[in-house]
Structure formats: C-alpha cells, structure tokens
Image (tube, rainbow, N blue to C red; front, side, top):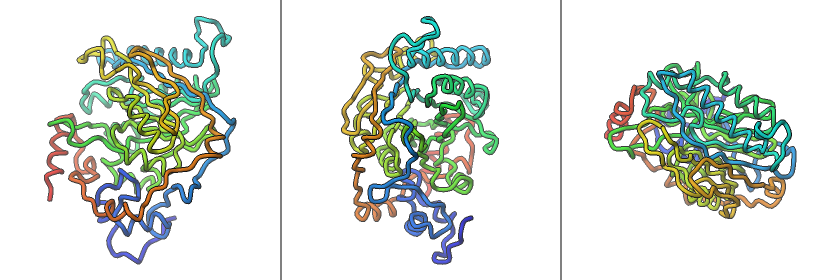
Length: 397
C-alpha cells in the first residue's frame, strides 16, 4: 500500500511531467519525488539500488555459467503469409538454440560436441524480423506473452535447463492498440521469468520519422501508476545472476543506471546497430559482464541490402574490465560462447562509485526537449506520425 506524502504539495503528475526520469530512474526525477522514492517515505515505490556496494540477489545454482550469444539473421514475417513465415522463423530460431547447445538434431539425441549453455542470448527481433510496418500491420506481427511463440522458446529452455533471452514486438491486454518493444527472459522451467520493456526510443535522430513501438518513456505516467518505479528499469534476479536486457542503443546513462540497480549481466540487442565496441565500452564503464548481440547478414529481407548493419566481430561477450572473452569472427550467422565465473565475481566485485552529490543538481534540473508520455497524448499509426509527434512535442515551451 502506498503512503501519501504531506511534505510536498506538488502533485505526482506535476513531478512526472519533469524530464530525464526514464533515462536514470529516480535519480533524474525532480528532487522531491526522487528523495521520496529513494527513502520509501513518499507515494512512489521503493527502487532497488546498490547501497554501499550491496545489492539484491538470489542464491546461485552454480559457481560459473556458460553463456552463448546467437548472431542470427533478420527473417521478416510476410504479412501475406503470416502463419507460415512465423512458423519458419520459429523453426530457424529453435535450430540455432540447438546448435548453441551443441545438440544438433542431425547428430542424434546425445550431445557430441561442446558444453551445455546456461544462458542463450538473441537479438532484438530474431522471430519477427523488422520492416517499417504501420500500427495495423504491427498488431498482426506482435504476439502475446505468454503465448504460443514464447511457449516454443520455453520448451527449448526447459529441455536444456537453461535461460533464453530474446527480443520481440509484443501485445498486452492492459495496453490495447499498443505494440511494445519487449525483451523477454525465459527460465529453465519453460516459463517467462522477466518481461522488460524498452526504456525509450532515440528521439529526433531519424529525420522526419519516429519509432512506434511503445516504450516506458512513451507512457511513463501510466506505467509507473501500474507497475511502480522499480519496474521502469527492471533487473531479473535469477539463480545464474542479475540480468538486464535492453534494445536501447547509445545510452550510457541507462546502462549505468541498470548497473546501479544491481545488474551483473547486461544484454545489448539493438538490431541493425549492435557492435562489439559498444559492448566493450559498456562493460568497462559499468563493471558488469556485457553480451552484445548483433544480427548477421540477412539475405532476402525485403527492402534492405544483405548487410542490415551487420559487421565482422559484431557480437561479443565482454568481462567487467572490457576484455572481450569471445567475438564473432565474421558477419554470418554464428554462435559466440564464454564462461562467466559468477560466484567469484560476486565475491570480488567492486561496483562503480558514482559521486551523486555532484551529479544530482545537474540531473534534477536538466530539462529535455521531448517530455515523457507522448503515446498517452497520441498513439501514432506510422513512422511519419511518430516523427511529427516528436517534432511537435520538442517545440513546446
């Protein structure tokens, strides 16, 4: 039950209209609400963060884990043949999961090569692909969570006793007409462990267009009322480590905030733009393990050349010092694997110390051009409408 605050007459909605909230969780919220959330003394939910080097975890099931990143192609669903192409894409993803587990069906029922993997990471859209679909088309592409599609992934996770992380466009009955850019982590029991909304889209970087997949920042007011502040930047506390997954690119403050919330493994999944350089930089500056998952070259993806942002050494698994333990050596479909000594990491980790006394005055007073809650004002039907919405909101005084 949330308690009312009598110390500050300003309303929660007034405070939420401030800026920078989603970029750094409560640290960038206006001062009064930030202090209330940090102390648990006000209406906002408490936010789980690192305090004096201590953060929330659950016991590990083993000391070290094997992690694989799947550099796979974009295979876009054909709206004219939706069911068949979705089935094709799921079958392809399942095959790659089997390959990552060194358990190719072609080799028979026994593992003949390699080691069991505890975490398999995929990029932003391994099942649906990407096209500049409008909202009506995206409604046909998106799927429910849980649903038949996640059940297929869940079956493989249960079969191998592993975690599988992937991105997708998702529907949610509590958010009619929205299509959510979602990161999903499925557990060894076959069920969804964590659904992590994309925190925000890059605003104003695409000329006259904007993205229409709903993010936390797009509906921040209602999102916080429904799920609380801690859920704005979620971290899944699992028995193989604390995992955060994001399709937000070029957002170092977001990655730092996730580390401040206790993330131990960061999975970066930007389709068309992921690269090992960003994973290396992120791991080093957050002192976390970082899995950067890129897509491979993608033949026959309509409207795009085969490259689709793919590059050699684009997928990597990086240790907290910024050392790449494994990289893809090419731009083709590939599996990159490394071993993470999670128990030793927890014993020896020294989380980054952030001098918040210096930062808070800047973060609390910074004012972004584009305020949150745009999709509560208007739900754009296509990329052109989204671009016009960004431009209009950025022009407000």
